[in-house]
Length: 148
Length: 168
Image 1 (cartoon, chains in turn yellow, brown):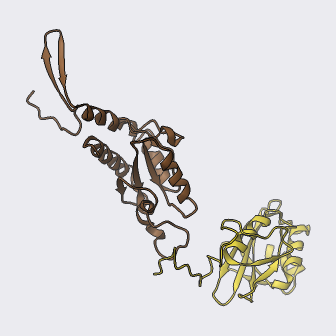
Image 2 (image 1 turned 180 degrees about the vertical axis):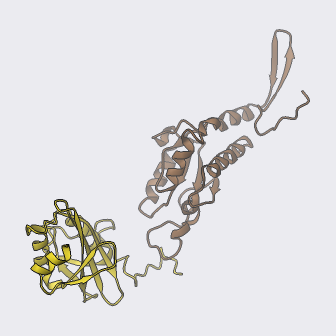
Image 3 (image 1 turned 30 degrees about the vertical axis):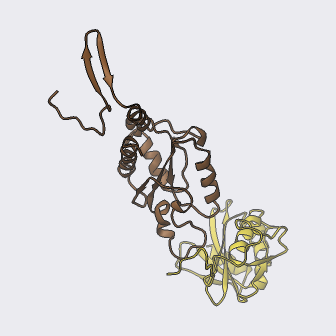
């Protein structure tokens, strides 16, 4: 159902199926436009962003957004690949979903993803002078970490 | 009295019956330790799932008030024992130290579960977890388990009581 509706408005949408929810793969450059559409188009109304996460694939990063429409009671997962792992950047969606403000700060804090147009992008859990991104797979901390 | 009484649980002293009452012979240190061991007030402190087991130990089914632990205190200034129920991270360590410093003497520490004992499941490849609460404050009794069952915590508390009675 949801898949057909998305395909109507986004003809070249790429999907991933077999998981609990329908996954939509979006290009980094298109993400903000797609997000706007998913939030405000009458046929979607994804008004609730309930999870923002980041995955380190060692070659690249992936941002994962879990969206829910409380009106239509359906859930969509959007995955956006960030190809440049050394200088990762993606558009912020905090202007659409206010909750993203903190979630994106968390992703910045632990993975080093820079969110364009974010109003207050700084460390969330770690101290301001912390060096590095602890949830990256290649993170090293000689003092606190015991490597296995 | 033919029945042999367990010295761990009985009152440390002898009663000599005399007309009109009796005379109690004991050592004041033993009496103080006996009293102390039977009213150890724990601090309300839990940082993860071990705290759920600790709450279970406190509630009706396991009921640690049978051993004198029911007066859980929300302030370290009134607590005798701190049960470290959960993971201690680097950010939490100074808070734990401060809580311990605020407790009046004599004070006791129980490290409950794998995290508080050694870092447990967070021993390897973690930047944030303290590998054992004994890096921060001295620990009297360690409890194994992840999380330990309420019986294990009760055993730890009784072990602590025995330590207190023995003068520790």
